[in-house]
Length: 115
Image (cartoon, rainbow, N blue to C red; front, side):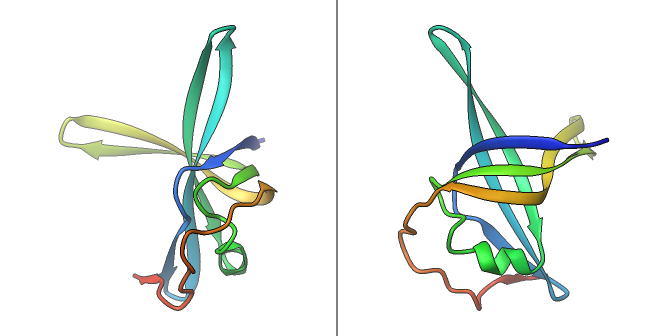
């Protein structure tokens, strides 16, 4: 079984791509965890959302919004010039917005990056 549940704040607005008619939304959340009385650690996790939910959630998934994400862990090993790099991300199955944030500027739904 591959289940992941994590909460955190978006570090920037969701980026949307249109790949052959499929909308893909990518965003990164920062999760803070207390490791001792005086110290916190922050983990950054890239999350990917697909389909109609991308457009429906576009105006809500903005920098500073607090979300609870449930999904599956995705690990990719990519060969680079200096060896292999490992990337960990979450493929989103379910998302709950815990704190709404007003977007700084209106989103333009019709201008997705085409691939």
